[in-house]
Amino acid sequence: MLEGAEILRAGGLVAFPTETVYGLGADATSRPAVEAIFEAKERPADNPVIVHVDCLRAAERAGRLEHPRAARLLERFWPGPLTVVLPALQPVRSAVCRGLATVAVRMPAHPVALALIRATGLPVAAPSANLSGRPSPTAAGHVLEDLGGRIPLILDGGPCEVGIESTVLDLAGEDVAVLRPGAVSAEQIAEILETPVRAGGDAAYARSPGTRYRHYRPRAPVVVFGLDVPAAAADRLIEGVLSRQPAGYIICRSRCRPATGLRVRHHADIASLTRNLYSDLRALDREGCRLILIDAVAAGEPVMERILRAASRVVTGDELDAAGIDELIHELSALG
Ligand code: TXA
Ligand code: MG
Image 1 (cartoon, rainbow, N blue to C red):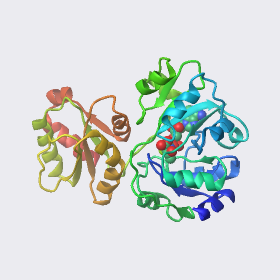
Image 2: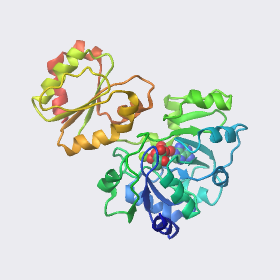
Image 3: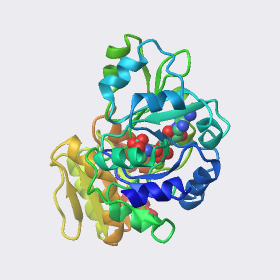
């Protein structure tokens, strides 16, 4: 921990666990330190990173809490998986905001993250600690896989509890909007703020630079079966695809008939799928799958947004009726 704080204070990078995913930290008051994050991750230059703090006072030094109920909201959900976008203040603005007038701030609910920030005595800028475009890391080993040799220290806090990134809430504009869905829902936020909260939709997502880029993709193409694909058709598709190449299957309901050779990751509920999605994608890649199939879960679940971003192809029930299964097997096999 002390070593981590020393590295951060000297302008270096440290990967650390949070309750959502692992972050790649740097001093959020230093432009060159933050620049090093972009280089290590190969992150697009116009995509700003989140500033991590250990208390409300530190958040108020990074950005202005203008909404009359903002403090109440943060007292309710911090530390936790909620990031708020605020009008930015110096010196953080010049160091992390990539030309925007706003800054994204969050207090993570992980003892190692909080201890690191406290020991450093600085706000810590940190995106997810993966190579840009890859699934976010939910274990120290994932960080090593992507960034080993590029950064001096990875703090290992075990697997992440939540498994997907924080909710990003825009509190800087006229209308309050969720820019990225996460464990804290728009309804929970609206209840505390006593204001309508916009969620989903392309307009909101366009306000968050990160949503313009490819995300969460393993090496193997990901194919998602829509909720309207009948179980029998899914079985036939899987069998057909499997006869041509090794494939993995991630499911959250028991509708799969585990064909031989299929590497199945079966989750009993959405929380388990959410916690394990990114590590499943990485593991199936490592096991040599040429194609990864995923059974869709209810629309509106934050994990579904990640699944759709990871996907190269979404198969719907309608097109199955129209194109026929054999044609689709042929097309999907060609993806892998
Ligand atoms: O759970 C999390 O949020 C994790 C952990 C490490 O805290 N961090 C994370 O960071 O997911 P990152 O950089 O992978 O995602 C940050 C998202 C991006 O979509 C980015 O575009 C958006 O937040 N963002 C950052 N600053 C913003 C701003 N000023 N306005 C709008 N969106 C912003
Ligand atoms: Mg990320």
